Length: 339
Image 1 (cartoon, rainbow, N blue to C red):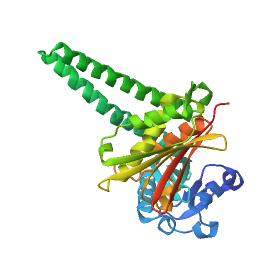
Image 2 (cartoon, rainbow, N blue to C red):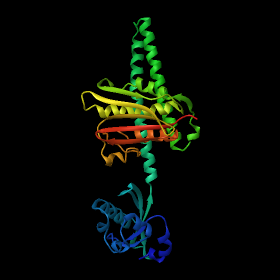
Image 3 (spheres, rainbow, N blue to C red):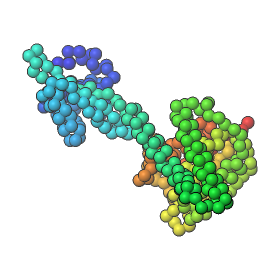
Image 4 (cartoon, one colour):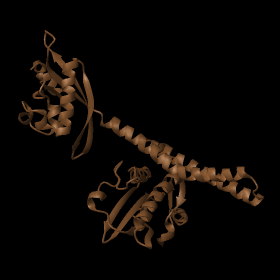
C-alpha cells in the first residue's frame, strides 16, 4: 500500500477515497467510501471490484484503471449510485501511483459528489422543456393569425377579430413568462419579493369556471361553494397552481366517456380551501412522491407541475395535500384568510 502512509488524514476526508491494484482489488478505503458503498471495511478490503459493484460499474472502473496504468495519466468518469434516498452522481478520478522507478503500482480513486450539479442541469433542461411546451400552443395560434392578416382580403370585422386574438395570445405568453420568473424567485427563497394583492374566494371560483382544456367538453364539473372570504395572493402564481390541478383532474377523468370533477370551496381553521377531486385512485407508492421535483408518471411529463404548485402554495403560507381513497382522488390547496 502507498497512500496508507497517511491513514488518519485520509480516513477523515469528506470525499470517498480508495486505492486499487492493477487487478482492481481494494487495498485502502476511507470512511466516506465505506458509507457510500454501504458495506463494512472487512467486506470491501482485499476484494475485487466485481465483489463490490454491479458488473457494469466494475467493468467501467477496471477499464479506467487500466488506462490510467498504461498511460500513466489520470482518467475519470461519472457514476450513478442508488440508495433509499434516490440517485446520487459521483465523479471519480483515477490517479496512477508510481514507485521510484516509474512503475505504476496502484491507482487511487477520489470520488466527488456532483449530484447537485446534475440536478441543476436537469432542472434547467426541464424548465426549458416546459417553456417550449407551454409557449408552443399560443405562439402557433399567434403566427397563424399573422399569416391570415398577411394574406389580405379580410373584412374590417375579421381583421379586428384577428388582431384581438393576436393580442390575447401575446398576453397569455407574457403571463406564462411571468409565472416562470416568479417560480424561479420562489425556488431561490425570495418569497418576500412576490407581489400579492387582495382577492376573494369567489374570484378563484370564477377562474375555475372559465378554465378551458383540450378535453373539458368530455368532463362535467360540479361546484359546491361556501361563503366568500378575502385572501392575499399573487394571482398569476395561484392561477398557475389551480390550472395544474384542474388539468391533472381532467386528464385523470378522460378514460371514462363522461368524467366528473367536483370543485369545493370552504373555510377550515382560518384557511380558504379549494378542493378539486375526480374519480380514480392513486397508489400509495406514487402518492408519497407526487410533490417531489422531477417525479412523474407521464410519458411526456417533466415532474415539475405538482412540485411547482406546492411551491406556490407554500409561498402563500398554505399547502397542497392529496387524499386518495374510496375511488376518489382529491387535491386541496389551502391559503390563509386575509387578516
